[in-house]
Image (cartoon, rainbow, N blue to C red; front, side, top):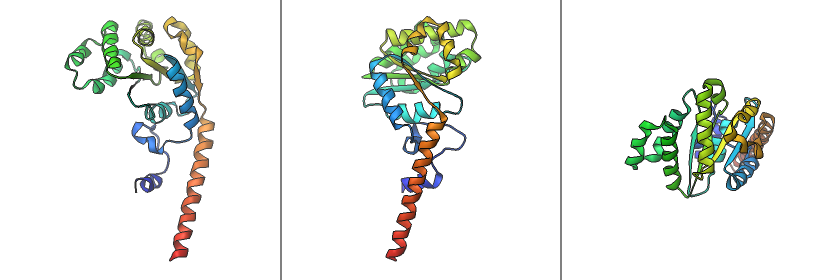
Amino acid sequence: MADEEGEARGPYPGLRSFTETDAGRFFGRESEVEALWQRIRARRLLGVIGPSGAGKTSFVRAGVVASRPSGWGAVVTTPGSSPLQMLGQALAPELQGDVETLRQLVRFEDPAAAFDVVARWRMANAQALLVADQFEELFTLCPPEVQVRFAALLGRLAGEAGVHVVLSMRDDFLMRCHEHEALAPVFAELTPLSARSQGRHCAARSRSRRKQRASASRRGSSER
């Protein structure tokens, strides 16, 4: 019944992006998701890039995060104009039950305190994935001093706390990462996405499902 309801709604969630709860309706990126997970296991800081409209948010949320292995914690944040505050808000639901660490969230604007909180979250999981989605916001919405603090924090989390960090951003902002030494490793492993390949996969799968439904309908008619 759930599959039939999903088919009735169609494979797209309208104008919004797919989230982890939409994983059952997200398809067309299976090979890229698998390839990225292989890279995540091998490296600590990676990048997902693509033009606007390529489906990066859907890819990281409904594809990568939703398919994380057992024992992996995962948090998705966006920088906004206050990236440390946004990270703290994204992390808070994962800290329920850890009263001491939750108290430290009030000091999350301090990069040292933020590092300690994220490190404690990391130690509570076998492995941990932190996705900074729409990472271009760091450059478009934040002043230089905020950019430096947040970039340095991400670099420390990957290098010292053992957190696997994925930066997802528009490809035309990738070179801005060169401004921050802490983000240099991102250039070693990039996952490029294009809207065209996603569209081809989705169209093919939609056609296949329509054919399956038509065939089932014909069989039902003949049995009656």
